[in-house]
Image (cartoon, rainbow, N blue to C red; front, side, top):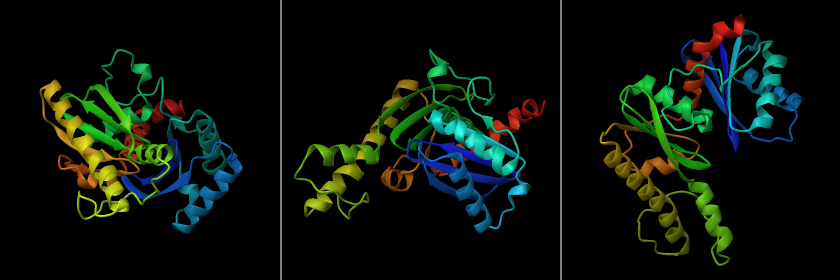
Length: 259
């Protein structure tokens, strides 16, 4: 079995694969002040509650955009599973050719998503990741990573609005029944949710126009259930896309890890 860790700014998504099957997944808060011992205790308890024997986990893969937590979860893998984790980054194979001006600038999560989406659906395609930022990753017909665009995420945009306008009160991030709000709360929800959906649709249209190819649109990320639910151009929802990318990366690099 393989333990995969997608470490983001807000949360750590953990997945355990039994072969190619994702046996379970859950989330932990990203906290740079929490020591490895606490994370190991939490993770061990969660695995037990899912009926999984941690001794059956023989490999681990980490993708991280939070450097302090990368080392911490490497330590967690050594403590819980007795194995050295493969960490996505320079020197690891992903199966994706990065065709940008500076490939080292591209986040590992972007590459992992592109690899997983191409594995599932082929190319060309656009991956829309609804996370802290809403990212658009463009994958060519041959699987090459062509580039990206990044916009403020759904929750980040909403928080910026609430912080800047003292007369506006926070609302739940969910869609109202109508795009025309009948009170202050539904007006905010309409603008935030439907406005973000319009942003995504507009960006996808511009990307397709500029690249000259269509391709399927794959949605993933923490806020995909809300953000993508009202985007008419989304073809597939894949909430565990990054975890799948980590499994693919592990398969490409595990022989190197053993040597």
